[in-house]
Length: 226
Image (cartoon, rainbow, N blue to C red; front, side):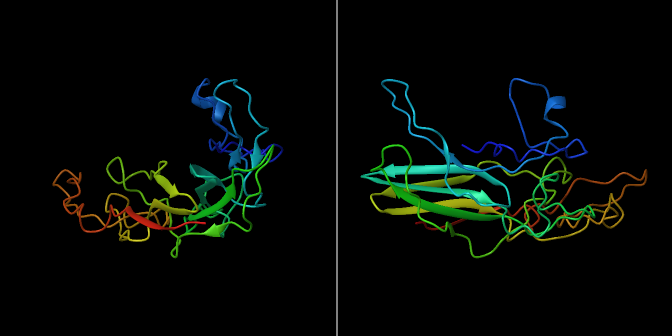
């Protein structure tokens, strides 16, 4: 699971918040940024007892999100999204968001493995391995009429013994463009995708008539994993 790492919380100064509780309304998720990490614990389904949660990869920068794990025949394999290489990383902002309000290539996929032969804490292979060969920007405005970005937990890993393979979605193939409704990216966020719209006589715009020409290209990639 991927909570905030204790003692990394800072005021964001904005409506951005990285600490989320499904039991509280949105207003309680604002103005608190943090660094998130991937934690592991082993649960005994019969007794309910579990080991103490521990960080899998204690990286000092970046957000780690949406882990997936596969366990088979004595081997554990895990992968996750990771923004340690984000040139604009700051706990007060979403990943890939810079202080000047632009967005940048910022997201990678990392993975590691460990043996199930442990008592309290597994020994994960270090350093974690970067699985993707091309980093990408997860902030492309592809949804809600090309106005907002979205990236879900689209990562999966499967293993047979010591062999494992992982897949994920990324944005390396997205075709950049401009949104005529904004007046040629007037917010300079570098997040507009290729789209085709015609302005009507009343000043409004048509829907995007070329959605399959690359502006929506979140594609699936994969690689063998540690």
